Image (cartoon, rainbow, N blue to C red; front, side, top):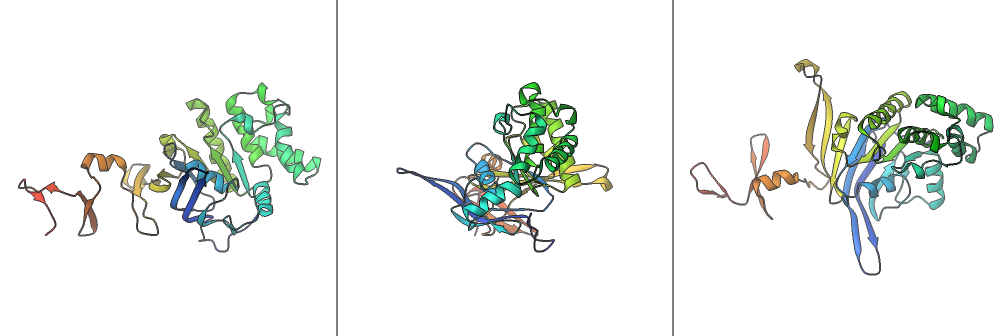
Length: 304
């Protein structure tokens, strides 16, 4: 496990990150100068429509794919320049991954406990060490009573909780999940996220979840929305007990290192903003208007 250099350093730091897929006939730009910071121990989600780049980002963070350009660090490891051999070590001990399809997470002919033991044995642990930690992790995901059952003998939600234990077998500081509740009903999904929260708080695991579910803001501390290969908005939960509101969720537009800002599509459509917009500083804020907009007297507003 790799430690950060200072407490204030982001655990995950993406800066002007690009990923381009090339074939003989075309190029597809999946990430277009993405900026993202994630603190150690944070529990956050990335949402976006299909094609927004969120799964590409998750695969790069998992060491399953390499970026084309830009900067990306996880802890003290530079994923842009790391060697294939180092990536194998990274995937084995520094990051855990939970897939949406339970069949990709578990070996079907092994019991739940044996599935959790496998990554540790492959990494050199003794049978006794692997058994002890597997029992601990199954206890943490509330499935110790299912330790002798094979995947086909437990429910889909239980399979995902076993998959979480497998992902944490070698005690990685980072846990990634790609649509982990996409095939589960709402109640079962809530159970899975309660387990995520328990592990996040109890083991200080940094947790990044990719999902289409925009209701995720009730389950995590921060939601980053992606559009066209960049981060566009953030939803952050904040305590507001002084105002008698318990917790509130606030939405922010993300400003990247180049000063670019994505206006939410629904705002653009409601204001009928076309290819250009007028920007004006008014007091302590910036106002964005369509290229032409009537003023209070009915005349088109134009900058003099």
